[in-house]
Length: 160
Image 1 (cartoon, rainbow, N blue to C red):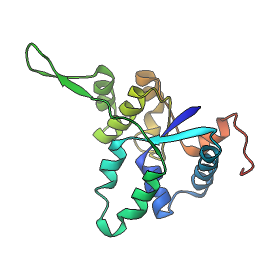
Image 2 (cartoon, rainbow, N blue to C red):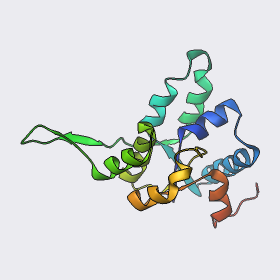
Image 3 (cartoon, rainbow, N blue to C red):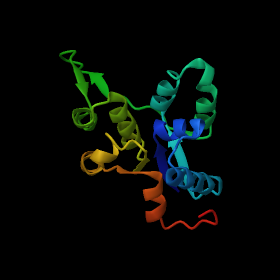
Image 4 (tube, helix red, strand yellow):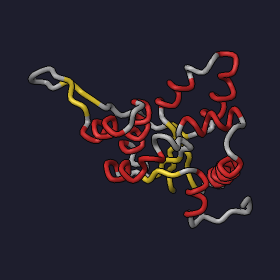
């Protein structure tokens, strides 16, 4: 089954009901695909950490959306060199942090990469979608909006 990594902006957009109409519809279609076990929607602890920063009085709807997703095990982005004690970053993570201005964006992509997930959906046009070709070149991850995924998928839906 195809695993699709869901970026935090999708989770928050669903919680706040502020996704653009085409992305809202496509995300609902993806949710129907997940319910029918045609895809598996996943996230990592990076999303949870970002959602924990949402103000407490409006956080619960975000966490409720997050809880509907499959959870990936976190992968280490760096480790200590046993000889010299220097911190060594994974080369893929290092390349992503050089490309993307927001470290959590690089962490999301790296978590998908480390877990073998090859599709990443987001509505982050400014950074992630703007760099989707370079991200794919670095990590092999296909980055797209929910509507791009639905248009390009070979899955059928009674919802569309």
